[in-house]
Length: 270
Ligand code: DGL
Image (cartoon, rainbow, N blue to C red; front, side, top):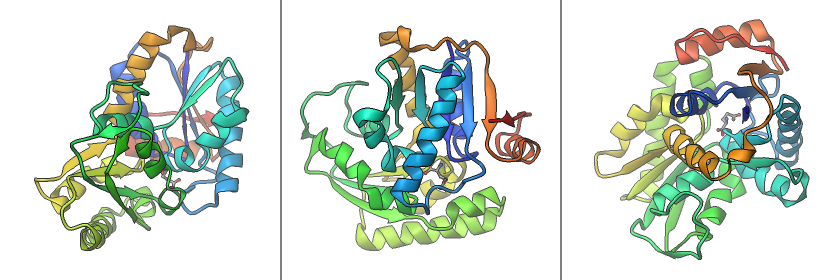
């Protein structure tokens, strides 16, 4: 009954942590494409090819349902995968829809037509590939009318976090928030649209100020997944063991992951 969690590298561990806490009895198979991270600076074709390869590996590990924890893969590859690549008995879901459902105050999985919503000005912080895909705006337009989105491409933040350079990560977040505020001085809400940003969420909150509602993905994805599995329990695949798979060097990735989550994690080769 395993569920797959796909990410370009280690960032998806923020999502894995939240889903594991929410669904302690479900085995999760995590796939980190560390050999090809970061995805945020790749082109859509490349992201599509890498993502489908990783998701195939998760299907082979007994997962019928795979969550793309990676926003960049969700933005650049998911729609194309759902339009013909995903086999009939499998599902691949992304991380934008739960976020947008929360932002527009919908029930999980509510696919009713778009309507007027309370939120009017939304700031999106994400990688360059996510911003240029405009996938967030497209998914939002399916659910809400009259919402203005200003996207800020946050170059450098993922690398600074991966390298453990907290001072640089904080400085970059503050300068990206300043740049966003020059374009949209008073957002009602801010979306942290990248797996790594929950690790610097407090800096985003501080730079944005107390009047901005900050939406961070891990808890929202966990809650929407719990609801999905209640509605579709048959999507729990045949896999029975939790695993961590990487395309990178398992020893190096395990040691970085252990630092990242502050608990021991052992990766196997994908
Ligand atoms: N996991 C990616 C995301 O959420 C960030 C890291 C990358 O650029 O690969 O967009």
